[in-house]
Amino acid sequence: MNIAIASGKGGTGKTTISVNLALSLGGAQLLDCDVEEPNCNIFLGYNLVKKHDVNIFTPVIDKNKCNFCGKCADFCQFNAIAVLPGDIMLFNTLCHGCGGCGIVCPMDAIGEEKRSIGTIEKSETE
Ligand code: SF4
Ligand code: SF4
Image (cartoon, rainbow, N blue to C red; front, side):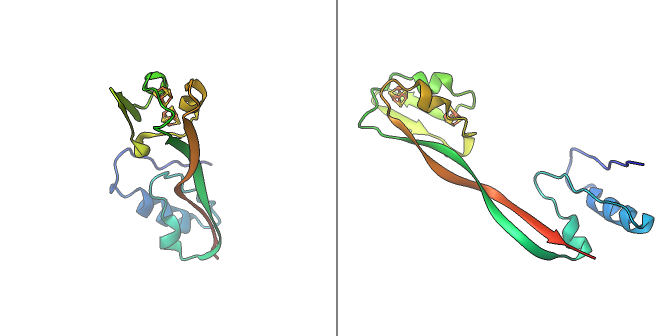
C-alpha cells in the first residue's frame, strides 16, 4: 500500500503525521519528497554518511565585449537579465542556469561560473 501525505502549505503537520504513521505501521519505507525542507530525518535520528554540493552554471557577462543588443534578455524566460542603454544587469538568483543566453550572444560576451544551489545528504538510521 502507498500512502501520500501532501499539502502545498508549510507548517500543516505533514512531517509529524508521516513520521508517526511510518513508525506506528512498522517496517514502512518513508520517502521525504519535500524539495524545500525535507526533515523527516531529524525526527528519526540519523547518521550522516555522505554529503555533496549541487551546483549549476550561471552566466558571467563581460561588459567590455557586450554591445547591449538585448538578445540575451529577450531569450531569458526568467527575466534574469536586463539590458539598458549602455549597461547590462544580471539577477543571479532568478537564473535557472539553462545556458541559453550564452548561446545567443553574438559577441561571445557571456561565460559561465559555478553557483551552489544546495546539498544532497545521505544518512542512515536504524
Ligand atoms: S542561463 Fe538561462 S536562465 Fe540564466 S540568465 Fe541565461 S538565459 Fe536566463
Ligand atoms: S546578447 Fe551578448 S552582446 Fe547582446 S546584450 Fe547580451 S551579453 Fe551583450
